[in-house]
Length: 382
Image (cartoon, rainbow, N blue to C red):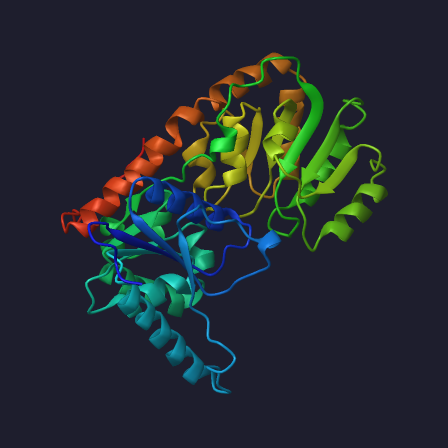
């Protein structure tokens, strides 16, 4: 499909629209640019059943870049070359002014396939950089290819230092905007005696640590419950742990639910215990809801980008169960302190308001498409 006359065309390139943090950010950004009058196309390699994916906003087209059965070869090298060729053909056909990509090898593919075209490539690192680019080869490729992109977006200052100085200087820091569903007045009534968490049940989220900390404090706070929203491969392990610790009647694992904001807004405490995160959307949303929050200091710096320890939340070392237990005791034992944290936390609604943050992305894209983007990056949102 050719670029519509008079409209700038932006393509978003991501693996799929499977429900996850990066995918939701891309869908929200696509909707914003569509509303602002841009032509918007979402290019994904894979497609999952509709119930497992985020729905695209009206007017946003979708193009699949994966090889069809007829195009597949028995050779991995040939398949790789065909994927590169197919993606390049998509850009030539769609003629976007700009392509935004994210996550690991997708960024490499975008830079390589837009070379020697009029399309500007913008790469973004939304997670922990050393996990997106593990090993010397991946890091080398990032440092070689990223400077060839029209733009580089990171989410934390700490993540700059994973990359070579050239990338550090070129990169800008742009946050994710807040999901509009979480922009609402803070609940100011009596807090329910509930501790909540939201996240996939995998080893990285370290739900085991929060369950053990809760069990250690169970007798001291007998009315409190712990609810973990999410699904994952460790569900069975966590259910067994809950039974082993004797708190099966007070720890609940309801799975993935709609409108999690409504379910959590009256809770007394929100926990994030991950070993690694980019800038956690779940943490952003808990802060925006005005919940008292305890979160681990993840290597990317995502937590310290959002929380000033003791002011709008509490930060503990990743993997430190004793520190979590002490922090939980501090908040549960002093509800007034928890309320002060929550009221300060809710101010993030202003800082990460969609119109404000998405406007920063739009301004950056316009600089790149106009060829006026400066060589030295900066922190775009204070």
